[in-house]
Image (cartoon, rainbow, N blue to C red; front, side, top):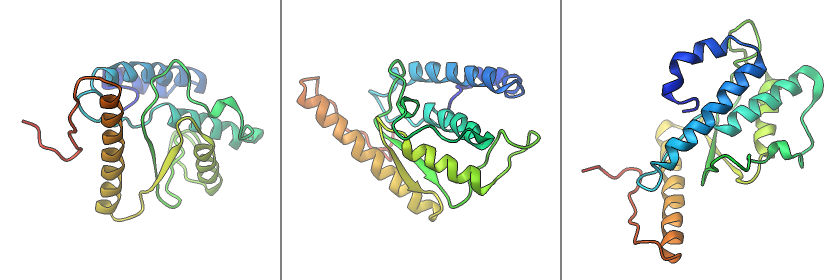
Length: 180
């Protein structure tokens, strides 16, 4: 999760700060998470919640709600930062009208149709890598099965690619494998 657990003691403080300072804190968290991921992802799949795209979408949506509108679809603001580790797959769990806005209202999450629509539109404009929309409103087992399948397919594709490039033989360890 971004920010990482090592930032937990600071999160409450920065969450009470203005948007710019809070955004800087979460951005730094993304780079620290990326370093943790680099140490892990050759051994097992890594899932990160609230990584760059989440914070970018929140910032863009907040600006749009304040009357500035979303940037054009071809804006570089929708592209992944060149200096930040890019995920192999990004899943966007949607559940009809259940995206909470943690920044509008007096410190309490507020759900509005306008916010939800803008947040989804922001996510759909992101590219490189594209975002895969997964129906989070389905039964939990169906949603989990879909996510597990997408992660395993991506992992197998990466293993095949690395092996074809001549790296030492990498074996698959699917999401539901048991550890020894």
